[in-house]
Image 1: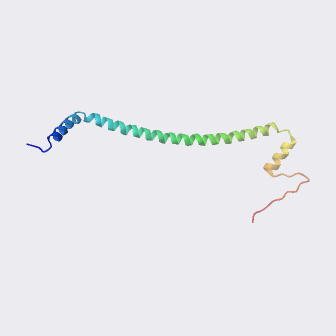
Image 2: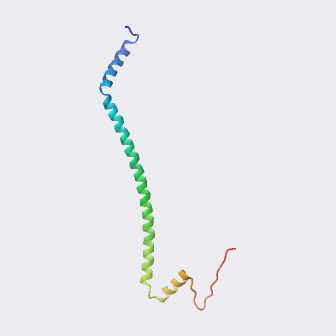
Length: 107
């Protein structure tokens, strides 16, 4: 059998023999790449979830810290009559004897 392209056919047989003997190496590389990409995707997904949780916990920490500081101030000034009057006015809406309470309604 005489071919038109003998060099190409010889080269093709050479590559076929060489690649054919190492097909498992190529398959191993492809499987390894697939596993690596899957692990990288899961790692990024986990990182995003943990970053979101960290931000949420930081916001809670800031809120609780402000609340703690407010309670510490209340405890520190619990015997001060002016502080007690301020707390009653701000939280319960209590007014003094010579004061007038004005309530606005939105119609």
